[in-house]
Image (cartoon, rainbow, N blue to C red; front, side):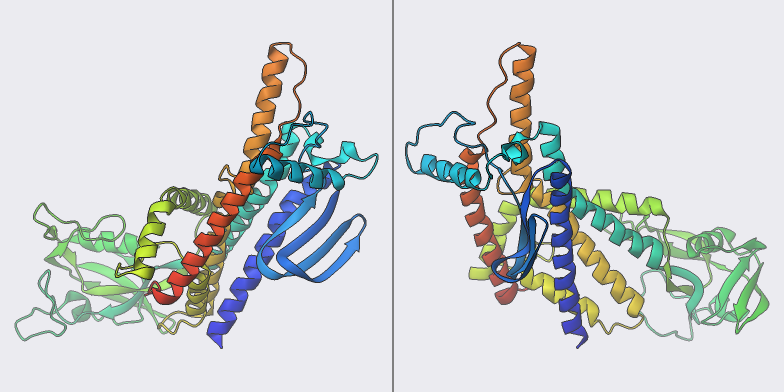
Length: 438
């Protein structure tokens, strides 16, 4: 049941994200006077719709996107000088112009999208992707600032009974192993360290650093146990322990062996807890996620080759690869139904929100690709038109005709076919060569 709930939550979250994306286009378009004839979530047959004012709002059967219909998206044939129709691609462009012109009611040419200035066109077309970015920032803020992320706490999860040599794989103490100083001092699992050597303890990193730097000196420790404070005295031993980097990974030498050094050692390990992060972490994480997504988009063609090899051949699918709709749904189901010890409702909610934030960042980046029918293609067309107008103004030439964006329709059809094929490939690969989440 939890698995199914996770999938349903994902679908609803994506639909809401799509709906808000289209709101990002619709609101500024209406503000600038463009008539919006339709606002639809989904494609295909209409399941429900209602007309309010001059706009029909509705939901369609296939939840794979959405759209707002802005009248006059393409300049009319007259506006671009009635270009001659020669060949197949020219006919596609001409049909797009005529279909767009038919949507413009008599006396409403001034309300057509193509009549907007370049800055207003940019605001309208960037409104959708920016809305996805805003959604991602809000979701990540809820995750990081509201819920928190798992981190080491000052409550002890375990207390070793002996000191094992660095690199030992033993799981039990032998008679030859020296007793661990933490256990000898009376520390117990579940104790929360309040102070160490007279210094108030705020984090595990702080405590770990103080233990390592103590050496073999006896120091007072105050712990909270069953609601009461207990004063103890611990004397760390000096032991060889691996050196770790900022991410907690062992530092290796030139031979690939772990680097060790002598540090103070108690033989205690921290538990984990949800720790709320500062708002600055939201900005940093969002920026990193956008950058990583951009790199994934750039390397997507190469990744698709590997995915095809894993789907139709003996190639192994990379765990770092791109997921299709089936894979994302599986991930959502597994996040919602995780039965890993210590993973509660808060962690599951955090995982779902993080997944939705990642999808919104993907929508933001992907829609900025400068190819129609993506928003980035319309942005590129608007910038080209603005550049021509500025050059004409500087050279004191007559104002040029609107950019004939309809000529990009063959490109739009090609991109649509490619995206459709990519979606089918990913969906098939998610079924026959799924990525294992672990």
